[in-house]
Length: 350
Image 1 (cartoon, rainbow, N blue to C red):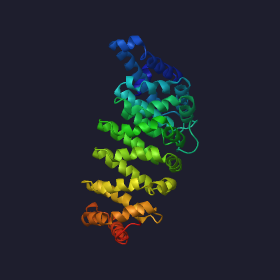
Image 2 (image 1 turned 45 degrees about the vertical axis):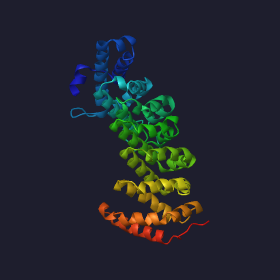
Image 3 (image 1 turned 90 degrees about the vertical axis):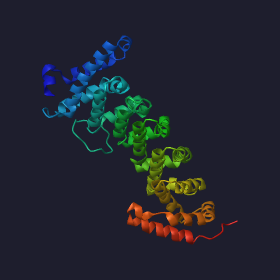
Image 4 (image 1 turned 120 degrees about the vertical axis):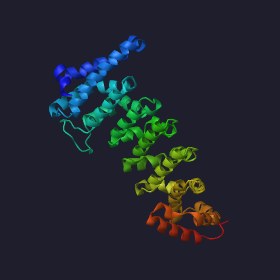
């Protein structure tokens, strides 16, 4: 890749500005109506973008130079080229979109000196830029699944961004966040799976932040997650139940857990999972049920519901084959839960 620089010697500033110029041309009315002109600008943008990527990412022939990386970072932000790259993702070719994702990945891992850093509470300049100078970039990335051409790239970039708690908070409290419960039902399998990966990361990456969010948004969250659990799509249903299990298994979400396990509607949804034909869905339902039963602070309504369905539970466990999952702990959990169910009164409190 080094030959590119020999043919096109440019300072970091000139290189970024050249890329910026080509990105701007992609928006020209004449270009959008003239395929040949559009293709020309697209190819030029791809060429300059490749130069930028190699400058900060390196390759087999060229080692990165920290001073140059810092200069390019400054230029990408000060000239709003990063903004143009993001909002024009759909106008870039496939390889260029991958290059944009790589550029984001590198920049998010570098601090002000241009050296690699471990993510900590000190945000690099690009994080501040995304949050305070160009928050529209994050909004654009959040809406990525709406465009099949850029959905996967936008998802990859967004998941890199939310490794930082401040960006994760921005995403969680953005009105567009709730659209992910629709995106995961996208008819295009790859887009739906990628959206679910993003939803999982947003809700599990930063425990304290998520715990507060779930406690404050319990009703709307449960409405959305339960709609997914009722989906006719097996993959959507299973991934949603697994996410819910991960959340209720985390002690950090204590306020959310108290609300969840006090709600008989959630117990009824759990009981419905036990009737699924899929053994995997039954297993996810079992993991939820064991929390309801083992909860020492069960509400009276939940307790009454468990008692009313005592015989149904015992009938289910007669055919629930834990051995097929090859998990010794699962056998112990099953035996414990069955014993707890057997110890329930035969009649609920009037």
